[in-house]
Structures are given as C-alpha cells and as structure tokens.
Length: 490
Image (cartoon, rainbow, N blue to C red; front, side):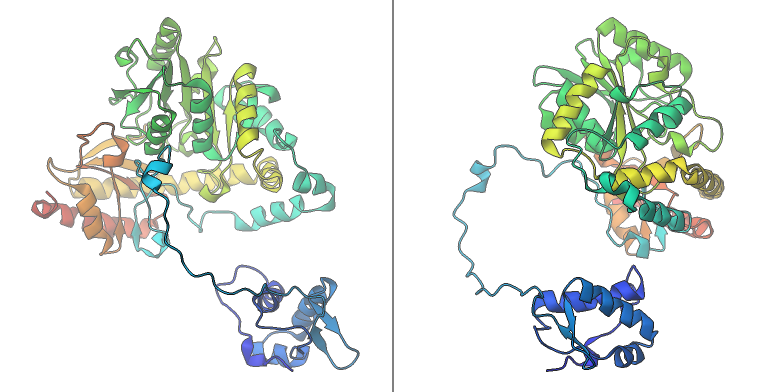
C-alpha cells in the first residue's frame, strides 16, 4: 500500500530546515501509527514536486531516515516504512474512574496560589506589550547563538553534551564568569565559590533553603520581586517586610531579629531605585552589627545605559557575608534559565549539594553553548545593542508619560527597562489591565509585588524592552485615556 502524497504539507511556522521538517513529518506519521510497516512512501521526485522544493532535500531526508531504520530501500521500487520501525502501543482507553483521594488532606504543603503574575503566552501578538522580561526578536543575535549551539554539539565537546556532571558545572562557563563577568562588578571569586543555577529564581530558592529555617527571620524589600515572597513563604521562615524609599532598602529599618537580608541594590524590583554608595556601606555596617547575611540580587545591572553601574554590594564586602545572585536569562533571553550564585566556599558547598539532590546540574549543552556565546564576544555585542535600544525607548517613553501627565514613581538612575507607575488612589490596576488587554495593551498590575493583606492596587509597571519604539506613544496614550475614566476602575 502506498502513502498518498497529499498526506504531506509544509508548515510555514516550522523552526528548522526543510530537510528536518520532512524527517519530522515522516517520523511522526510512523510513531503515531498513521504510516505502517511495509507501506511505500511517495517517490522523492513526486514529493518534491508536491511540496515545491528541491528533490535533493527530500532525498537527504529519506537517506537520514534510512540510516535511522525508520525507512528501508528496495532497489528501484522506492522507499518503504521499515520492518524495524517503531510500532505505536496498542491499548484500550482506560475508563475514567472517580478520584477517591481527599487531596485537601493528602497535600502536606501548598505551592500554588502565590503572588504569581501570569503574562499571556501570546503576548507577542499584542500591539502594545508593556511587559517586563521578554525577548525582543529584533535585538537577539539568533544567528550567532545558533552557531555556538552547533559548535557545542561538535565532537570535541561530546563530553559536555553527554556527561553527567553530578554536582559540577561546565568549567568553561565558570571560568568566564570568574575572569570576565564578576570582575566587571568588582568581584573576585574562585571556581569553588561559584555555582551555576537555573536562573536567578533558582539561585534565590537555593539560598533560602540553605540559610533559613522556621526559627530564622528574612528581611525583604516592600515591594519586592513577587516570586521571592513565595519562595520565603514556602521556607516557613519569619518574614520582615521593610518599605523601600527612593534609594531602595533603608538599613536603619531592618529589624534587629533579621538573620538574612534580601535586596536588589542595582535596580530595586519593581521600583527601579538604585541604592547609592553611602547606603551600601551603611547596609554592610548594619549587617555586621546584626551578624546577618545579605543576599544581593544584582538585578538588571547590564541594562545601565545612562551611566556605568555602581559596584556590586558583594565587591564592598570584607566579611564574606554577602551572597551574590546573577543571571544571563534577562540579558540573553529568559528561556535560557541560566544564573549563578557567588559566595563563600562553605555556603556554595551546601548549595551545590542541595542542587545536586534536586536537579543535579543545568544541562551541559546549554552551559557550553552559553560559554561559547560569552567568550566569543557575542554577549557584549548583544548588550551594547540592547542598551542603545533601551536608551531610545526610555526617552520616547518618558516624553510620552510627561505629555499625558502620568505619575512616574520609579525610574532607574543608571537605566533599566521599565517605569514604576502610580495611578490615582482607589484605582484598581488589575481591572484596568483587563480593560486595556481588549485594546491590545498589556501592563503589569503592581499589587503582587507588595507584602501583607492590605496591598495597594493603584501601582503598575510599564516595561519597554519588548515594544517597538514607534508604538510607544500610541500605547501610552491608550493607557492615559483609560485612566481618565478612572471611575470604572475603582
């Protein structure tokens, strides 16, 4: 029996080569049971003509499937589904049974229902996406990232691709962080003091798990990164929210019972406040006085396009009490999920053991690809391109906000990628966000960033990292017009 050529069609959204798309179509047909053993495929000439592509492309795809034993060749009669091809399992659908487990009692700890802020998965389809932390495809260096990924797949890097490092990391990536990334922040560290993580959020989780117990107290900024609040709540430690001001976390407001202080001095999340040098020294003195540790999330330091960023808090630390959190996910692309912890060897040893027991290590191929991307200079070029784009967008955004007399309560001293905004008292920005979404405008309501039960609802964040500069004025105008009808959002 022959498989009809009409079964095949090209997907214009497919990410990959035509050859790989043909291979995938045939493999999926076999694995799903649509194509059965012994069935003849269309000839390479016929399939190429049907799809409107080169015959050699189809021939190469068939040859690859032949090598993998998905297809077999029979002299001059053509290609067939191999007798050794995988066979989909044959089973009868299981009748759905009633769930008799009382999950309200069976679940010992709850992790859902926290301060999550969900962005629409199709955010890129919106015309005015003022949302934070997404990649602008017009800025990302996809070609060089792909080349680095291919290089990391090469024979000489086979061990980095396939080896189980257990609790270790790619030495090339660790070396680059130690010799290039950290010195730019004034930090000197040995490889034993560096741990690769699955992004900054994973780094914060590891730090919380190692440093905190139910009897210890964590001082956090208010407002703060909403995921950090959830991480600390799940650790069951005592929480001590400290309201921030225009310079970030005020050291004098840290309670005396604090054991660990979590702070974002470069660009406070979400207000974008930058902690001045004098306050950084005050914070270190306060921590020494309390014998407390500090976890520094060096949030958005790469996005400093106005002035050079201030030295990291870690670089000023002479006691070894600062634990530094860095990330490549914001500067390269968020789906990368690569970050790092820097701290005293005793701390890193425990964090490494915890990471090893949970996920062993981040994928070796991803680490090696990132190492190539960084060491070959592509990362620095990408950062320069992003900074220039953010500078232009920030200026256009500020001009539009001033034009509409919208209240800005936070803008990074050195740069950044967002504005922290405040609407009139009584305005519910979550209701406002739903209204604006229908107009193609995405904003981030600010309630999730605050602590406590009576959290203000009239704050919101406007990011400009993902919106084209030409759309900013019109997008801001739509927000301003919606705010004028604020009676609807009370």
